[in-house]
Image 1 (spheres, rainbow, N blue to C red):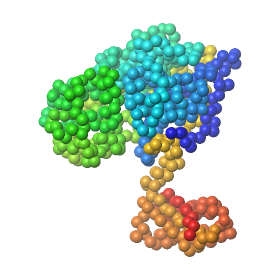
Image 2: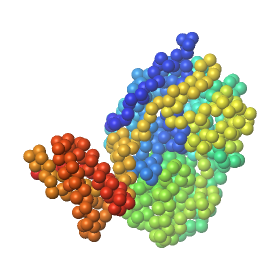
Image 3: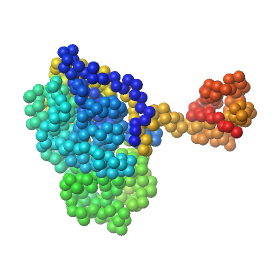
Length: 580
């Protein structure tokens, strides 16, 4: 699977010559490839001399205007073109917006991956899919955790430390470079009572601060929310209360497939109330299978019921953990809401619990649609806007972020993992701590910071393009294609067929065809006038009939102007020649 149609002009404008200081010593360069303008699609490059490493490689979720797009991935062309310098990919945690694009990268560059055992297990499971054939045999994993020794990767020395998030074994990294130590802390919060992990290793983080930190790359998503983030353990009682109130009823809970801590809480509560667990949806099934194999979900085999056998059990004795918390079309929950799930029959007065925050951009409408469908089918839908304690964020709020900034006290900051607005709020937050405004670099995708002699300045910017994944294709669906799809969805298509015989245009035989624009049987006059417009163009340009490209362009323009004047709409106009 190749990256296709990606603009490569000027993509490699950061050659190694630009990385040398005047004294001959290389510069340290940090490039935010993605993950600074949106919450998802996280990826950061560290470059020093002839070596570079990357941290995280995640997917983004298409918004409502990205018609037909499955996921969005970072433009990794710079890494592919510099594969001889690309030494390692280092992963912070197991969420899709940090690991989901790794298979696409590995199909281009077989780079070693440093990750914890959960990330490795989930990636190997993902690579069993047919479209990733062969990757699982060729990928080179190195285990990294807070307990492993420091890893030497070229000029970089990497040491992991514990942070808390909504997935087990989330890590921060101390990246020691010849220019100084950089702390990379992607999604994190301070949780003193987590479900499956020890608390954040704040002592180690503070020690790095005492030793001196050149730059802190910090999660900034919670920078507009006051206070401290709540512990995952505060949800324990929530599930017990919900399951008790739903005695005798069918229960379904949807959450993020990689939220292993949340699944532990759901299964634990179900077991207490004598219910068995049904896993519905491939992503949920894969995550639980991997987590159980690694010991994160130490429950007996007999508590699980296969989704194919679930219908033979009394529904009051089951809890379904079902994929589709973001309303993804085709997910198990989406199909259930449309009576298209072959394995589950939604019962009247079922309880459906959304234990996830619809955080990624573009999913709110899909979530609302699924909830509406479930409600109309008689389910009681429980979600965060009508009941508290259904979800706690894995991202630290201002109290958490201020604590980390205060104990690290770096010379420079780069906010990551949020939007432009969140990054600006983070800047104001550290200013209140007494740090100067110029110590914070708010970076857009592709922008960089260069460090030399302990000082930092804004570096050059990579020329990036959005890369859309549509089915099995990567990069073939460009922004132009997406724009065409948008136009088709709103105004339809208008096709002009110009017949050609023996190399000459046959006048008076033009045909027009439309779909999704007007109802042809009731608009014969408009169709006739459209043909007249085309024939008029052909008559005016009879001497240029051999220049089909120019003639086609004139027809498109005149027909577009005519249809806009008559209808106030702009369908996608296609002019096609047909040899007869």
